[in-house]
View 1: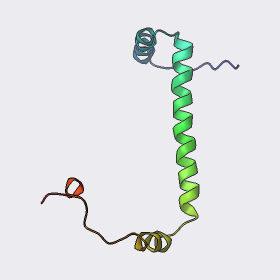
View 2: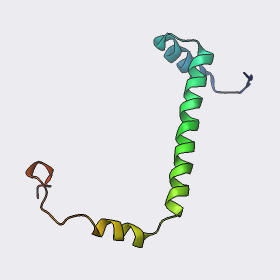
View 3: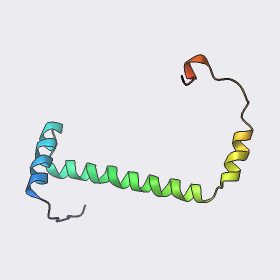
Length: 80
């Protein structure tokens, strides 16, 4: 486990303390959880971008052309 010292506005610190208390956890645990969530989002974004760079618009159109051409179910139709 590592220690990270950061400077944040007092208003943010106060809000984090309130949110951590509402969650029933300490500030350290709350901040660590928030950082983990943000890192996961960044990692997922990087993964999707890498995968997308391997494809092309034509490949997408080729895949979509394999879908059957049928009318949508009434519950899936867009109303005008």
